[in-house]
Length: 382
Image (cartoon, rainbow, N blue to C red; front, side, top):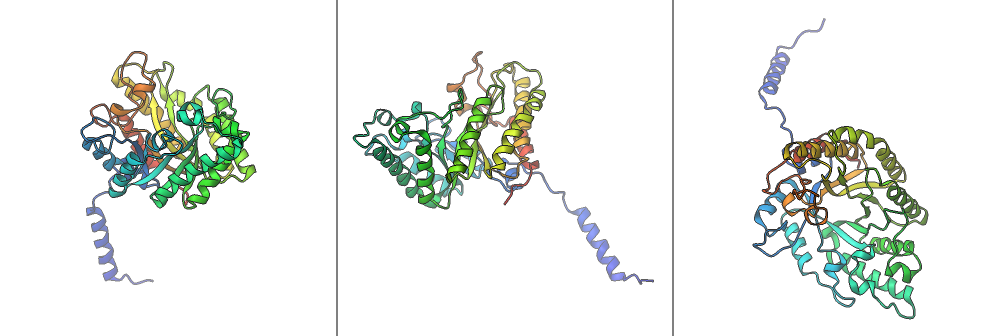
């Protein structure tokens, strides 16, 4: 029979009392803390604007406070695109993006790069759409693209850890690759995309290289998803150095619905099949531009916010169930500065409520849904 050690009993009793007296672990109360608990980073797009302007900029103290509160990683909404940094074939202008990177580094944020090539003529600078590539068009087009990627990536070095190297190369209506002035000069779109990724890998071997697109889970995206899968398969066959699929995640409720959760359940199986195929090819995932388009929901704020939150929670629960999913970035934190107001206004004129904070920078049910999803998702692999 074992003798009971009185000192062990006393020590055990003391430990039990201490555990009972200790406060319970508190749930994360910021989006960045909730993400970090599962090995991820939460972040957002942000902008450049002069001090005093009402904008989603780091120079706006109220908005900067939201960024500091909830974000660990940032991405420029527009200021690293070709239209912003390369106004002419022989001239670069980094003034605005430099200021954004300097502010982010000075305040402890990581930075993503968006984008080294937006493979869509609509968003090319005018000089590139109208370029005369001369007697050797393929060589000249390759030189312009290589020069651009080398110049941008080498300027920022290790300050930027992840790049959307190519953005939106797939036509959503057909599933085929878009043609541009570069692809016509180089004899096809795939050679352009290959060159972009290979140039980026050589210039910044440390960085995550992302193909970024807006194929989504709603009805009507079938051709877009199929086209992205075909492109990802082609990258693997060709040995193109692509690490990750950027899932923009501008999800949307476009038709009237009384139960966004039921709609999400219907969409889930096909969306999982898509993600399963992507990850089976060895790609990682990243949410690059999350928000919710609410055109199909009523104008009344209560039911609209509930619908947005329910739809977002169901979507994020799926995405966050994949250990291959890395960072999660919103395309802006506040409805006040969201691109949705200008690019996709509601038919009734009401302000879209697709961001975690409202017009007055107050948190909404969407933020609560995002917080819960991030806190309970599967831990990130690696």
